[in-house]
Length: 140
Image (cartoon, rainbow, N blue to C red; front, side, top):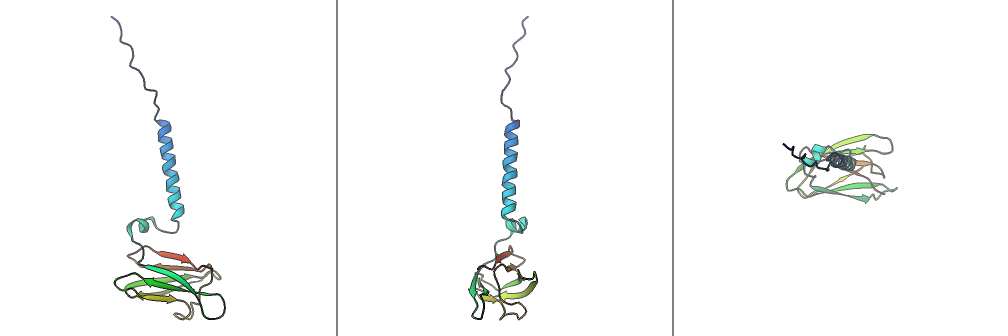
C-alpha cells in the first residue's frame, strides 16, 4: 500500500501582515491623539460643537489689545462659562454669560473690570455642558 503524498503547505505567513496592520493602527491613533490633545475624546465623539463663532477686534484705547467678539448661531438662549487664561501672569478668570439667540457678546475690560483686554497668547475657553469645549488663542 502506498501512502498518499502530503498535502501542499501554504507559503503565506500572516504574521507580517498582522504586524503591519497593528503598526498602522497605532500610528493613526497617535495622530488622532496629537491632533486633539487637550480635548476629551468623549467630547469629540459625543458632543456637537458650540453654535458660535469668535472674531477678534482691536480695542479703541491705547495699546494693541483685542476684544473677543462671540457671535451666536443658536436658536435659543445659551448659558456659557467663559474662561480667560492670561499668558502674561498665568491667571485664569471665569465669568458666566448668556448668549441670546443669534446674539453677540464681547469679552474684555468693558464686561468685567478685572478681566482686561486680550493680548497675543491669551486663551479664550468657552464651555457649555451640552457642547464640546471651544478654545482659541488671541491672535496678533
